[in-house]
Figure (cartoon, rainbow, N blue to C red):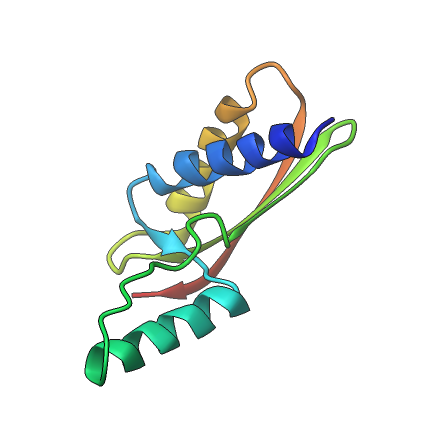
Length: 111
């Protein structure tokens, strides 16, 4: 497995998860939070740094037999967590095609 294949899998998992109704966004990592804070300070003061948080920060993918995919999501209010997590799991499994994958979905917040 190459780094490019892993990155493609991460991007595919992130895209699949974000398409599920009720997913507000993927949980940003520490780097994304710091970048968002710096961006907010720049807009409030001197500049207009409009970089977004990393779109795949809430996804971890590890190769193996089966592959392992961990997805950390933030829900939109008004959606049942069970329904959304089932939808995310199904979308992630579909993004792997015939490749076996173990999926863990964690809800880390609600907006």
